[in-house]
Image 1: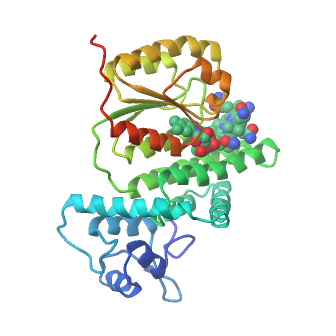
Image 2: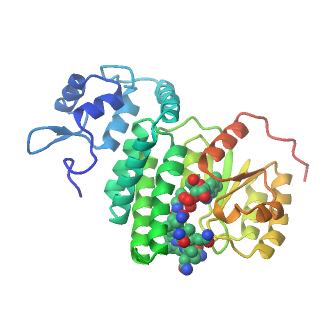
Image 3: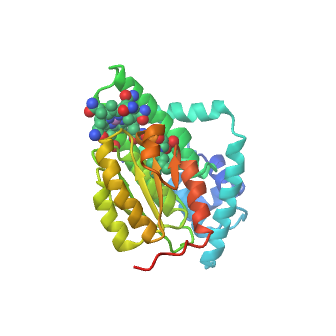
Length: 318
Ligand code: B12
């Protein structure tokens, strides 16, 4: 395991910024054992992003200078929610240079297959106020695109591409632990990757995004035929059905099976979202009609949010 003093762990100043507290408070909490830290050879404290995130959640510390104990769980959610909405405002004004710098660091960590560094970068971005959709669309996808381009040019091996994906998957798992638990919206989403498509990251991003917006998510994994998804939709009555496709598959077969899926979704009041480059072509979209054809996760976020705040459509009795 990597030490606290390496890579992208937070300094006292950065931890203080994330926690909305003074540097002196952060040092006091660290010295009192409330906030895990380690010291560098030079005696400076370093904090793991995960520990700072946990501390923030558990102590509602966005505005407080003293850790609270025995707080009401709801208050915690509110504090995190308000700091997230500030984050959304902040990223809108974020300059291109800082986004490019983040993509460059991420690309570097991914090409080395360094899962810990990739995790630290994503977690740091999140704690710095960037919403999940932004992290997926503007950072992770951009860095992976560079990796795909290098592979395409013959400058990166398939093995390196696999390692980069593993590093990204492990970073998404870490991010999952760090992101605040939302209030459940009591809605079910079923998601999967299209048949013959083995790209896992978009699917993992879909699951994470919806889960952290309060959805219960059932992820059927990549390479799921429409007919198998149709069975699940008929059985579980999800409000949202998301399919990810990165490379175009057998369109004629998809069209045949998709009719059944669409009918099943309509019967149970489910909306269908088809996302990714494999569904981007206008002809494909015409033949596979859906409530939303998403080009990115920001669109999914907006759409899922609108579903969660509107009444489900009247469902045809079976
Ligand atoms: C990692 C990777 C792989 C890995 C996948 C490992 C794994 N376990 O997941 C491996 C090595 C297995 C692989 C295999 C192949 N790959 Co590949 N792969 C990639 C790579 C580098 C990254 C894809 C990724 O995960 N991106 C991260 C996600 C988050 O970003 P994104 O895909 O760009 O998605 C964005 C939007 O499209 C949208 N989105 C995507 N899906 C969804 C879903 C929903 C619901 C929503 C709302 C939004 C959404 O939001 C994202 C963020 O904005 C891309 C490069 C690239 N340009 O994308 C090539 C790439 C996609 N692969 C490519 C190819 C050709 C292949 C292979 C055919 C190669 C081969 N000859 O074997 C196989 C196909 C395997 C298969 N049947 O699926 C090409 C596709 C070209 C094309 N237009 O068809 C690309 C573009 C590489 C290139 N530059 O040529 N690949």
